[in-house]
Image 1 (cartoon, helix red, strand yellow):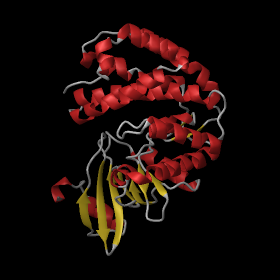
Image 2 (tube, one colour):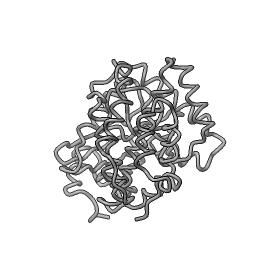
Image 3 (cartoon, rainbow, N blue to C red):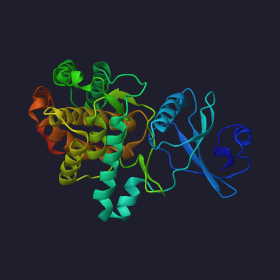
Length: 325
């Protein structure tokens, strides 16, 4: 274990009042970040190791402090060393929303309703001091599909036409995300913790932007990592609209951002396989692809749907974008 720990970690922990704890390494994610659970004299904390230059802890700390200042449930920060990428933070425990629901499926409606309520509370806050989710960002993300997925699928596509179709589809949405809300961007069942006091804790929010309220709903209800039934998705969308209020454009914008996010994720999972040697994410592509196809069926997505008809062969679509490592 000692060999796997960050260098000079004893010095950081001693300065933070956490000298000589018991340390347990936790499973990693799709980034260079590593996490360790610390226990000392009956108290628990998490150590985040986000080593520069691959990672930068400052955005995480910026968003965490803002969320906690708004009464949202982000981890409290106990100590930090920005230069080394070390953060000592509150331990939210072991109950991820996904794992809890795997063992307690009867709680699904209640737990998702509470996750929707947390979004409603977030969206009632003034938008945070974060960059806008602008057209350039949307397009940069969505073009990951032709950049990474299509070559692995063995097809050549009209990349310029893809971007043009998306620009046409997303333009009407931009005015409706001003002044906007804080968008956490990865709000799903593996990034929501069920805490002992009955609240839900937020993690993995360092990429927050100011954008459209439908985005995090898509992230939650069209989850790349967990099956969410169409019935539950519809019920939770209705719950959100009852609590937050939704205009006549909301359903179309939800489909727009659903297709945009899912196309991005397909590209990211293909990139994780090819560039980063992480083929396990390929098994999730069919779930994401299926949700993307549902979104593409909305009339608001017509230009992008026509591009898919012209560029993605029927057999790939029928196979839900499945790739092999």
